[in-house]
Length: 239
Image (cartoon, rainbow, N blue to C red; front, top):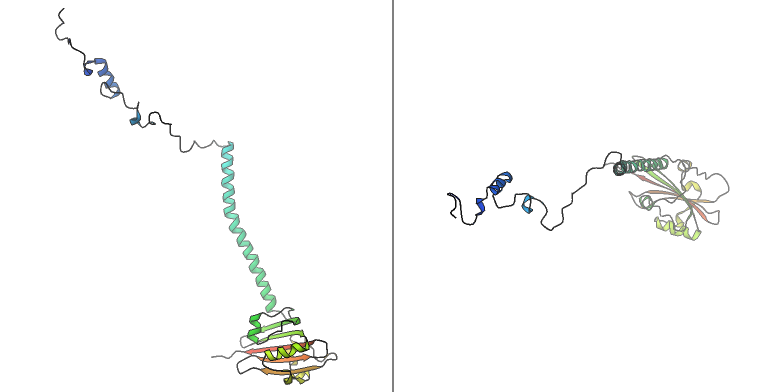
């Protein structure tokens, strides 16, 4: 049987199917190929591989427990960022105020302060208080030209010699009578009254060398332990 003119009698070729050609036009892919979007090239997950999760989920709805939890955490962080520096500032202010008051009390002190003078003060004023001294008290007075340190302590009589040696003198330099030591004017500044009561006083005025502090020393030997009164004066010389 003869085929109609124009009809192919051989096997069909890929491009000979009109339906395939129309499908290619609809999908935009050549005939005989799968349309894009069905494989890995379309940006989907690799074949046989797990799908990639989202980086973060959608924001929680307002009023939900998750939303409230986030709000509380945010408020707590903001509160800490503000409260901690403010707390440090308040504490610093209180410490500075207390320190200022302590310094002011010491500067405006008009009587003896029952405590040991510092090592720096002892070096500056050349007053080496013995280690085993008792009832130690001091009073420091400063000005532009003259500074003085009043010191009082009790010590065993045998320790008195060591103290006098430390200031560059000795017991032999003491003269009987309080007037040979601390002046009445200097004693009145801290309430030392050498005229009251029955006491036996010895005194001296000593200066180690020119430019060093001048020491007025009065010793009361009428008690089992000697009571020592010292006024060290430092005079500043201008240029």
